[in-house]
Length: 230
Length: 346
Image 1 (cartoon, rainbow over the protein chains, first blue to last red):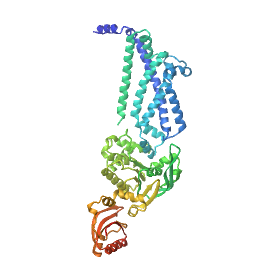
Image 2 (cartoon, one colour):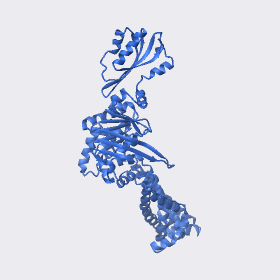
Image 3 (cartoon, rainbow over the protein chains, first blue to last red):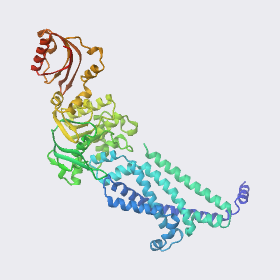
Image 4 (cartoon, each protein chain N blue to C red):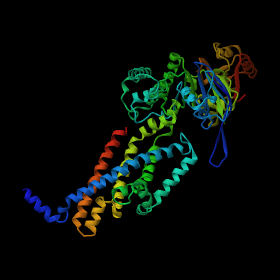
């Protein structure tokens, strides 16, 4: 029986069968890139998203200067195509990471590519919090930091989870693109073998793996959303 | 005790113009009082009430609460002072992600109380507003009236001396409105809490307020105890508010559409009697018909109790000799009853 399956796989996936170790190493690289740059983007995006929300007109710490600066920088990075960002950030990446290639080299551009997007996701999640609820918290004597933690973030947990899911999935796409410029990972794997050597089964298996990861994230995200929306 | 001194609030609008939402308001609201501020929308009443706890910082004037000048406090001091001024809102403004108990517990977090102490306090507060069994429900599972009760419990968590109600019943149906007003009245007498009620509905003022201020275009145009303000309105807007609940003004509509009830025979006239004093114990209608030998037919009447005294009046068709009717009117005026001849077919 086992032999049957093996023969079947060898027949239909002739190119991928000998490459499982490379495949899993690539998968690990993808997960590492997504995990590390995702963690940074999460923290930075959260910070800037909150900052934009509280400093905008009518916000609890209204400050036009801060708002305008963050807003403009975010818009700038969002308008640069990621592939150009990858190239453009090489000097900075070298400065920070010591190298511009491999997983380490991909992290800086991934953080720059994802943070502005996630900032907007957080901003729109926090915008769902009713102004009246914030006012109620103020009337109970809450200060700005307390309002951010106990009202804005708590009330929009569902929206934040949704934004995080979308951003994480986006990030997987970007990490595959980073693979094209030598970052490794599943994108690199698919291009090197599936595309350049025309081994179609490699491409298919890679795509399947990505579909699986994306679905997993979507399902997890959906569960978190569901728990936090009443 | 709340004192507003020359309070004004000016907003800048988008094209750099300015809007004076509140102008030069002077009010004194006594401890334990239920005070109404009534005005149509846009009158500036919501801005005014936010000037009391400085959710809107007044551009001019001073705000004192229990002798403390709020307008002179630093931000942290002000936040401390706000804990003693509860506020409830038209849209309830509950935290949707927290249960009823967690909503009520929100303002107790940094109060230095133990977990068990907070739980006990929350239970007591929910008991006070009659929602003991809803502890673990989420706001989305509650009716409007229940939501407002939770909001009241939350506003009372830190034992405030003042409760500000910003259109607190405007999103509720009439019956629920009454039950919330009843609760506020109870809290006022049980806890001695000062209540400031902002509303555009006359019956809310009638139901619970002892004193009232009428606002128009950012200015308090009339102020005083509810009875004297509404029995003897000096401003047109005050009369407009009375008309929103009194049906005495319907007489004009009836005359206009030539209703059979108001068709007069020769020698008759329609008069409106209005009580201007708290004492209406005299049997005025039967007195005039006996003394002046006239017939008085009551078409309709509308008498309300404001602050425990009757306000309103009667519409009569009187029939009799011309001089007798004149004498009767003079007699009534002498008794301090407002008399207005609305239609005269003599």
